[in-house]
Image (cartoon, rainbow, N blue to C red):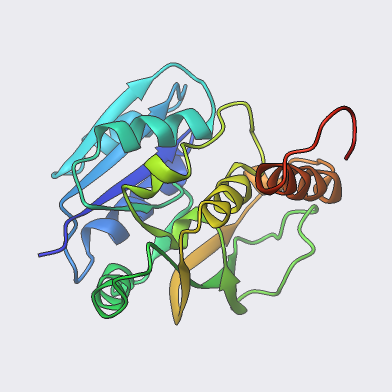
Length: 227
């Protein structure tokens, strides 16, 4: 039977974490384990995790989401790894759908899927995305199911990146020749609220350009200062 470890990084996500955990524990395809990596929270996040039977909580000093996910990867025992952000929730058949897809497509190592937008009223001022209930393809970690040996081929999450670390990792995975498949079903509800990390202002276009430039360099190294 396919074994799946669930990895949930959290930093001061007490008000959302319980729902995320409940959605992971209620999966039709039962995970091998649910690991919460508490990234030095100063609220009750760790207590919420420790209150759920079957959840293992790892406490680390505040180091960022990449370090938290990397710690979860190091501790996980499953053949496959599924990531869930602490403020998102899975639909009940998320894992079952992706595990079934993995069995029918053994040459694919990374499974993605669709997400549904849920806006916590009032909508945060920074948000200018799709409306409440919209369904669209997602490349965010909450929809990922990844074979654990992918992290040997593509490396771990870059701990120096506070934003865009997931896109950067997918670029590394693609450059390593790892195959991806987007499941057509809605797998995750993405909750939009005032405290989302996505609300942090940053140069999105500049970040994407940097990731693409690094990808080009990995494929075709250049010398000097050429870009």
